Image (cartoon, rainbow, N blue to C red; front, side, top):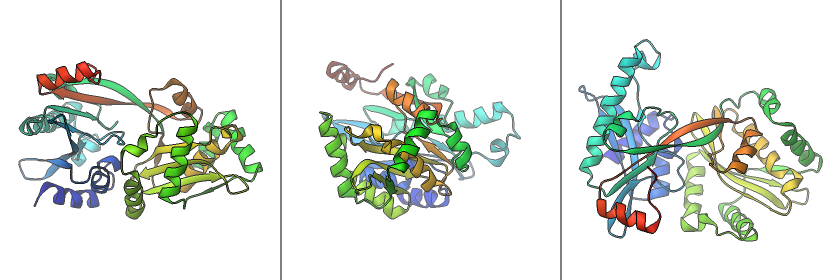
Length: 327
């Protein structure tokens, strides 16, 4: 059985695999330009997986992730004895090191010119990659770890966010979850144009990604409208059994102070209750964006970026173009 065919069945059996590593997401975002590493133990049991996107640039091959993935990286199937904490930290680290070394060896066999991925926050140990010459740096996302209790959740919002939500509700704003992909992308494009910015969504077939997410039952478009039915704020959500992710959003810049963006987040959290456990704002290293997420009571959560140049020629080219990965 080919890796991708087997991986489809693995994902069906393991909804806890992060959505950006799920079979349907990889297929929707990367088409045929992806594959997956499947790591087995000596008894042929699957102990880890790691999907990856394949890109070609100037004749070079890059092993990476789709631009709209927050993270991919290894997903480890820990034995119950490790997951429950019955085994020592040493044995857990030894288990991880063996898996990571297998992944490193398989990456070498791909003969790519460069590898880079953001690893899921679940992966906190990158030392085997460091020992093998990979570089890493830390990035951050913002998370609400428990969205099951509305009262507790709302109490964590800062006063200004609570006031914005009440303000929007008093104005008769409503949130829907049935906006079409075309209308969403048109609104998103317009809001970026009004801010004098290019819409990055135009680079990819985002309509296909949205429709596949909806088809799979793990995606929705959220739209908050005024009392006249005019869209004021939109976002696209995807989720797995553990986390929902706030992927793409668009806000009418002329009316953002009326409370629609805050109401949209609040209604989205209500919508997601029972579908998943937590909410991920999809991170940002931007100070002002991060401050806004903090006001919703979100926690700062680190994840690691790992990369390695296998080709000196490509590394030099990357540096000359100003697109090189940081050390």
